[in-house]
Image 1 (cartoon, rainbow over the protein chains, first blue to last red):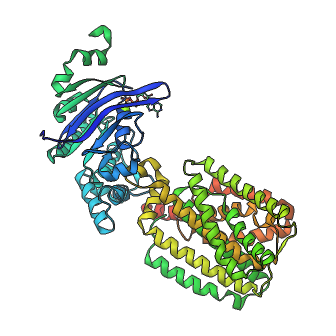
Image 2 (image 1 turned 135 degrees about the vertical axis):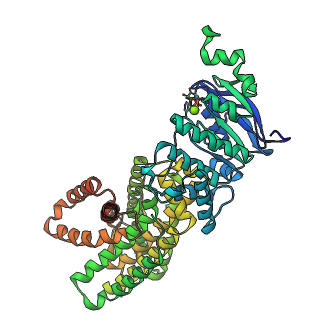
Image 3 (image 1 turned 30 degrees about the vertical axis):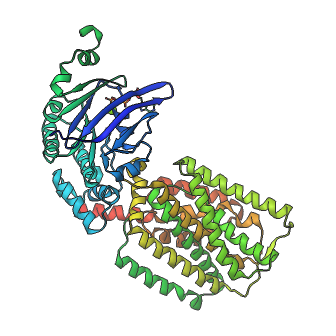
Length: 245
Length: 310
Ligand SMILES: Nc1ncnc2c1ncn2[C@@H]1O[C@H](COP(=O)(O)OP(=O)(O)OP(=O)(O)O)[C@@H](O)[C@H]1O
Ligand SMILES: [Mg+2]
């Protein structure tokens, strides 16, 4: 899976909200076709890190590059067009639009800027891909939680991103749904996609990720294969607290 | 706003042709109501171009409209320019003003945007009155032309048709789709790759363009213009009420609201001239409370429910 040359590179990135340091001096690289997990306890700065990659926030310090090109000074819409697609920790759909239109939004304005039939075809393909083509013309309000997550994933895929950011895409699913969800992400992995995923579900991380970056209180405390980091003393201490270590 | 189809465009063309005959069959009172209605149709439809999909409620229509009327008055009275020249300049000034307001309000949303546009419109009215009173002589402005009600009506009809046509193209274009996404969730809009600032400013600019043009065309109707009168904030509210009453989810929604409302409004103005502001407030409450999607939105909702039931 691992190949030379990093697609995404994060260097010395810090984010401060007033006095609060949400992310502190983070650095890591993501190679092409690699699936990297970002894990850490609640409030450790994972979402903030994703927000900076996607351009929702600007880093206070440091820089982020996509294929050698600095993107951390670009607005979110430019970063999306450069080829970074994301889902949100709390699903964000467009309630006034049909399922198909929600997905089409990704195709029309994303990395490749499709329009007309072409955009419709891509939207249908992506809905089929996440197993939701039958719901194309349904209103958003009729979708179950996992289906909403699927629509959001389809919208992101429709933008034909080069790097995919998934923020706790598996969170909140029941056991059967979780199985379906893990399968879906496995399929993305088999396609050779480059993915950064924030996740709390440890089994999923073990089976999906090539590598993990562990965050605690905004800083990187470990990096390596899932097995390596999950047996790391400092990681265990971060998750369980000092007493249990 | 959902993409408008060819059938809808055909219906619109038929309505425009039919509407063009009104001055031949009506005169006096009904023609005058026709002029007022046509003015509000053009204004509300152009308001809906921007505010319909984005849900940004703008109360600046009166400012653009006033700029149009005032430029015609001032140009003709103070600088002896022709009506036609001033009517051509007005929409350009209106568009520039709207673009500036658009840029200034990019970071505002919800109620902040509403208040800002209202405040700005009031400020423009006061600045223009002040300049007029202190530097250009405090007299009113005369707009004397050979234009009669039917000519004004036909010109407004052309503007309304142009607004509709523009809206028709916009609703089927990328920028129209972008605005609907912006109306849904601006964060999502940015993250799928939409330059939200550009899309919003372009559409808002078109609203300013048309409102100023309408203000300029209607100016000859009054012959005598005072800044305080053409920059009426009441007009901004009426445009919003009519658009919301009809429904801002469709391009032809405002049409459904304007015609009955204009007639009722005229009647209220005659019967209860001192309670008109109260009437506006009451209508706002009723519409927002009972018809948030407008008449058209409610009818579509009912139709969908009936189809599901059958
Ligand atoms: N927009 C913001 N303004 C101020 N503080 C923020 C903002 N966003 C996040 N924070 C703070 O930054 C810290 C990191 O939050 P973040 O959401 O990145 O954590 P997380 O690792 O994603 O947590 P979780 O696992 O619960 O999703 C928290 O203390 C949070 O309160
Ligand atoms: Mg988070």
